[in-house]
Image (cartoon, rainbow, N blue to C red; front, side, top):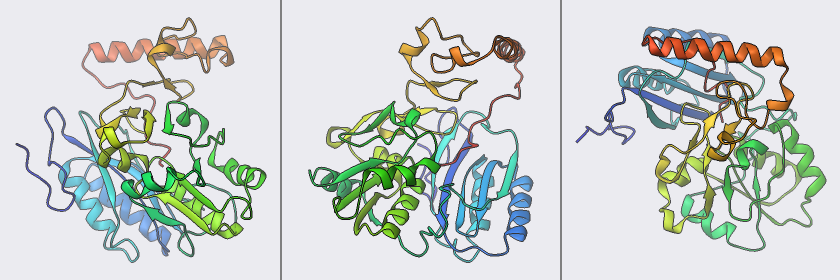
Length: 324
């Protein structure tokens, strides 16, 4: 039986895995961003931790991967900073390092909405646990909004949730203004993969005057981890920005793969399509790619396979550049 990590309550390791993948975010007022950037880059490099961390005046967001000891040191370093003392994170495991380098970037927003003055540090909707979430969204008077992008929603969402059909989170504010109003929609509940987008979306809606606004704490991932499948209101799988591509209840790895050209999830049905070419294109992008682009992708896929046959890693498409 594997040892349990005292702080995270996660297994120290799992059979066949030796890499810990830590997803984290927190809205908190941060200062001295240049110094923080340098400190984080140094501690990650010293401990062979790779991935991406985004820092801004509103907080931090990112996904990193490394050894158990390496991740623990980085999390400890983060929690030494004012505002991040209670930083929470979610862990999964991988057989190999899913990232190729470490990047700490200073951004205007840790999740880009593009609306001035929206700050979850000032006002935010009410958090709901998975159990509370079921009760709230079962209320027919509740408007349930999926704040993720269209390609994410297509592979799974909550029962009766509204899909805004957005291609990026920047489109969400315009969608809200054109479809909802504080006078008509008295009760709104929102969700996303890990909690960051719906938390910022709730701050935006509170700023617009919506009074009763809720969001799912820990996002879909926490819900799928904690909620028994027989009591779940989730339908389908959940897209994730790491090597698993999608997860199911219990956070078991799902059935989707990732198209290297358009980065969209590819289902088993998609893989049976004539427009699916392994390592090159999927039905979503096949007709949008030039012959030259397809030829380059085919050559790259060939080199990946040759490297695999030699037992080597081919540097190619990366996971985690979009952190939820």
